[in-house]
Length: 476
Image (cartoon, rainbow, N blue to C red; front, side):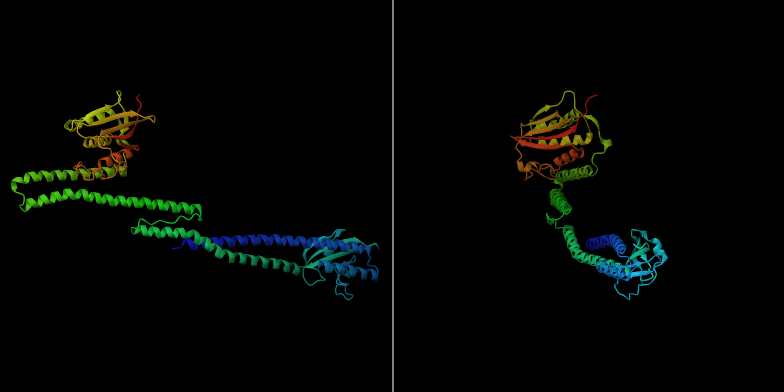
């Protein structure tokens, strides 16, 4: 498997090398063109200048030819160009080398070159074979009229080898520059790549630790890193924190389930063993069988509640289960089912329901369960001769706000945020809520959230109130 670090370095270096090659090639092409332009300007200027001197010093006499030879020799030293003067037939009369016994004197220039000559202005000829020179040359040739009336030619040339030497020097400089940049780029790219992959390696190591149960690991957020790496580190830490909280809740859930199951299972096991080994007399067995049956029913309710919670959390409320119904009627029917418990505690019931009804769209069975749990909780924790309240009001957001309240002890603020947790009971001794599992309010919250609505609780001045919202259907 390829490592991202090595792959990143290889890709970056390849891109840098390719870029340098392209830039170097483009530079060489431009430099070659520029060098050719300079040579062309140099040769044409040299030929034009030599033609001007030859017009002034007619080469008909030996003295003039000698003086012209000296002048052309100075020009050659200054420009590096070789210049010759030819007569009308192409015979070389004067050479810039300055020697009386010059090998070029008397030699013939081809008619092709003479035909290419311009009148009073030099013409540039690229990479031409010239008979008096051994190698191919860059040349400029000019034709002019001498003072004696004859036609003369000035030919200025420069060796292609000199041109190639300059070009090869530029190539060597470019190669050196490419190598120097690559030598600098390799450690620099390696350091940058390592710096960028280091946070990823830390996250990988942290993820391995989390996979082995260490939920407290976090990665450092280095503000000198790129914004993307910082965002990734923050997201990773948030994920780790969420997983840690989930793991904590899972452990608490297992512990609570174990605790809740322990008591009824111990009771059932103890009574069954007592009846089997004869410790419990036969005439008392019906009494203890009723106790065992009650504990079994409690376990059955726990299983049903947990299955319902799991279904709502996984599937939510399917659209086909939602329908329109009157919320006032549902609340009233649930309240009537608590008539015996309310009368047994001599509770006062205060209702504030809309006279025209309150139609909503939801799962009627789930809402019935929700209201049942809230009223059951209110009746359970309301003291003797206390008051419970039911209220349905309209909000300015097109919703109904359903509230269930009861008088009684105020829930401490530190407990208020935990009342919707699984297996949470405000009475730590559990003596008040002996038959409950601490799942009623958790089911309430799950049902509300599955309908994508809100629920909250307040407890102050001896009154505790649970409120949730449902959508409002305007009458047609």
